[in-house]
Image (cartoon, rainbow, N blue to C red; front, top):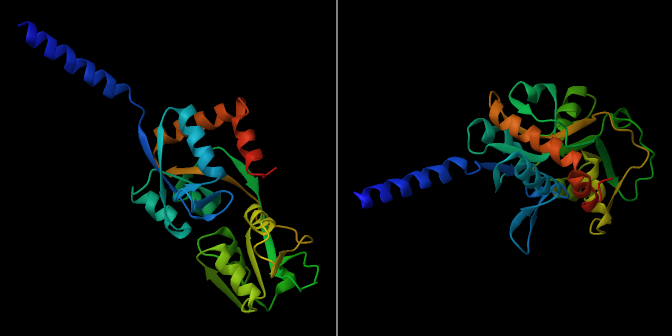
Length: 248
């Protein structure tokens, strides 16, 4: 009888520990969005500002995270098919996306940047200044949607990554490219892309918020995420993460 009670007590303790364990959420991120998300070749892990933010939000919101690498264009399909539970990447909140997924409270805000060949001295200010030219942007971003919507360019080419876009601009295959301004500024600051430059005179038109993204109807996860975001804003953790990645 004592052994039965002992076994029952151990089983109940096991169930109690299981019940209070933090849920584990699979977080989708890309390998090409430095400094927001990128593949650290030394550790072979995805790192970056949005990875640090996701981990901090998880800790404050009461859940664990498991980072999974995917391409930018596959992030939303992976979320809606439950291959991942949260998106943490340089993904701006837009009305079309909000019809498919739910966005958290803002984590960071910015607009697009314009890159051209290093020897192009034109002081571009607006997208219209490049009407009739071949331009490019990353597939799945709001920037390529905006370029296609305007209908003023000779051709709009889609790229899987920003380095691929920079390569074609340097080779003269594309006149100009549009991408996340902080990502462009960070990558060009490393000094590895001397054949292209960021146009300082350009004024962005697609401004937006970077958030964590969850499935439509998943109110529990959204509540945990927003609770975590509020906590890391309040205690200064988010500001420290932004400073670490030189985004302010």
